[in-house]
Image (cartoon, rainbow, N blue to C red; front, side, top):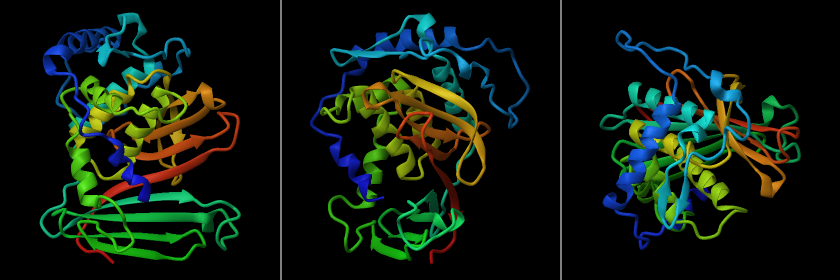
Length: 312
């Protein structure tokens, strides 16, 4: 989790486009996405149901960007260009807003658990089951209280870090509380506004601007437990990144099924980076990376968030 310091790269001194300047683009973008979304009819009070992912198999051309950035302002797409993945992510955002998030009360913690496989040559584990390593991050309801981070499993022993506000003894730079507060300050007026915020911070990283935006947004999604509104806007922002596509029926490391949403980077041998979202709740449940493209090896993780009363 040390590379959560990615937030330090979000420069505070970069001016964001003003609301007046962005308003026409937001309006046209909303019209375009509404035109691309399937028609709906009135329905009874909401109940939990699978999201319809039928649009996920459209062509690469259909999955082209829903928006581009021109002169610091998002240029809205032509209505026909709204991608299937954009519709999927918009539905996921709706589910995220409709489903209540776990909330830590006074003295409680939000526990973010991330499970992943360590390399075959790392540690002492011999079987794939023994190679599962877990990172548990305990976020206190009062962010200035003690944070706890535990790394265990995978044949690599156990490491425990503790510190008020997430200022661990071996931790340099902003505390985790400071990083989380920066994340919670990301604009959430719309997905377009959220993407404009990230795009304004671009400093030439990755092999392309689109890859860099995708990576920084998905890094934020997996870094901490996030409130539903911010998570929804991050989903909507991803829908506007060129090359975004979706794959239904993908299992995370624990076997939980969701929809994988990602993009392949043509400037990096079509390597692919995805998030896995629960189609019933809009919760992030894992990630999948394919460094050599879809035909190569896959690295899958599992992510879950719960409320706990105590920490180890």
